[in-house]
Image (tube, rainbow, N blue to C red; front, side, top):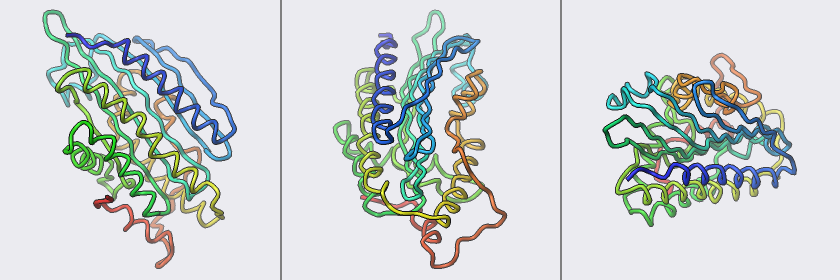
Length: 298
């Protein structure tokens, strides 16, 4: 049976609305919206907020299609060669101004490829991960417990599997370090059937809000100064490095002719690199490297 693409699209647009509403209500600000069309087929709507709490929050919905798969996709999945494709999803990155509030990322997506005389190839993917600048054990435990709890109705084995996948994916190979404390990451999800996979993806979408918003509310009033800000901007450099060097979604978007401004909305508005920067030994900044090492948070 062919998946119900319109059902997925409607949900994704509603998810974008819900996330934007929750973020804007905390910042007492509004998202700018840009509707765009992709020359090769499809388009989307990009929403960006630049406020006091969230220095930059980008929440993007896209639905693109084409007659030929990009090289990055066929290299990963050679059976997709010669098929037309549709890809849709919601992708977001939130960069708070306060260094004690972590950066967060989430994505849920659906992909389908078709050719005459063959069954469609389809799958869901997504997840969410957290990038703190200052580590709070209780926040990390809450983040991962929320991830575990949303997975449990779908199978006890999912959380450890998707946590491990997230830890492995958001690893900066050239730095030999994690980007943050992880969360969930899954891809190629198409069993046992469409409805089951769709239900899980919706749970992930809601789980992001359940995991992130309590942390924002708890840490947003903490005082910070120039030292914390400089450290935050330096760590943001790691975020940029990962997205430009390793992130498959960035590469797929650029190779399929997506809207560059929307693809790169994940970048922080301010960032710094300093040659051979080393946090002062014994400082709160120096503890982050140990805090973000892979571990069992639950």
